[in-house]
Length: 229
Image (cartoon, rainbow, N blue to C red):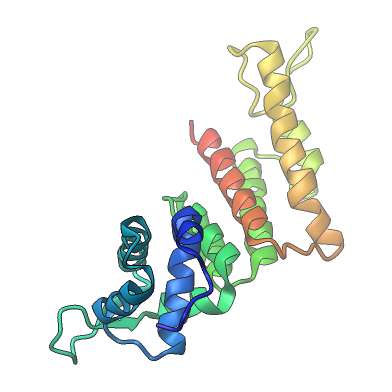
């Protein structure tokens, strides 16, 4: 362990993922292979503060639980570890990327698992967001039977158009629902496609914030689940 400039109170106050990534970065920089040895080294600096040492120990547990470090079977010590592929990627991409990946660490509908998640994990956030919303568009068209010429917002408005004053509603309008809810559903789908899918069709959208891209994928997941009801 390098001599850190962090005070004990700062270590205790850091979010566990932030602290863990600092620990991992230090271990990599120093070629550390035994997490217990790392903690023994840290004890020389922070040993008088049991809460700081507990936080550092929790950081190692956090890294192991998320697969960022794995056991080194070539070493006899139980505490021997290697930084995993995911760990190296997390160090390279940074904490915001890691947090976004964890935000997306839920079961997605089959279409998004197959198409959007791989793009996201490769770091192509714009493609992941676009593909996710494209899947919503494709599914709405399949369920509604509307022509291919209708896309994006127009497709959503036609598919979910509420029936009123003797006029027939869209193919996906549910007559038994409240009129206000029917409008809300139409606007929800139209707004999502208009904001997160259509702009990417016409100009470059910079989803440099992986958290934003993750939220778009999760929104698409919610919309697809609503269509499955």
